[in-house]
Image (cartoon, rainbow, N blue to C red; front, side, top):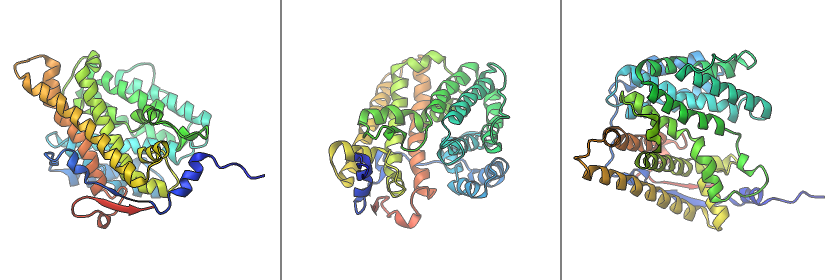
Length: 360
């Protein structure tokens, strides 16, 4: 007797032949222009690539990570920072992918107990590294690759601890822990053979892309600090959430062709298609419109803060001086990195107007 085909399995087969165009994502913030740290190439060649050589043993994985050129994004968010901070942020950004690979394509992919244990030890590691909480966890039960995926962060944590206040370190930690807890295997939201609602998609997606710890790193980059209670401030919370959503949406738009061809349908575009019965082209348009809504949210916060120029409240100043432009750099810097790092497309596939047409 044949097994019934569940909805998302049939959907995978139906994707073949779908055509769509990814719009120019720079149009989200047309006034944004990337500025780069002048030592971008030096950081990549002399620091980041050797760091990956030391900490990633598998040659194919290491080559893939080096080709991703994480220094591009780091050079944007660290345009005015020291060379040392540029290098640390480049390593930190690369680390997300080194660590996440343990779950996506490493020995933890099909090991439920191992995943939970590694996540727990990772949380203990960051608590100790950033706040000296508890003792340094024993990692000896893990494979060499799993150990290295945590230990490579030592020099990142040491630099952050040397430069940041306790409040700033606690904010970074508070954004790291939910990310560590949220990482799971591919297609986990389809585990019960049900198509997730858009709300279920957002609930999971808002943590898995590590946007919040990346935003929190702006405190390290700009030598800034704020009480942990600032995370409850509506302007700061909404600014971070709008930024997070822009990153999720645009990343899901850019990654959709590659992931669909790999049989992965966890992104926003497929979820919209299945929930609303629309084609890929329409779902891509809707996704861009959703990103524009988030941009308007950031613009509204920015306008309100600019109008209150006489307000000297410390958090408002931090929002104006660090997080408004910093969050734009995070969102648009990741888009720029995706366009120029050949992460999902080769340069020849991207038109002069930065639109991308594809067929699945």
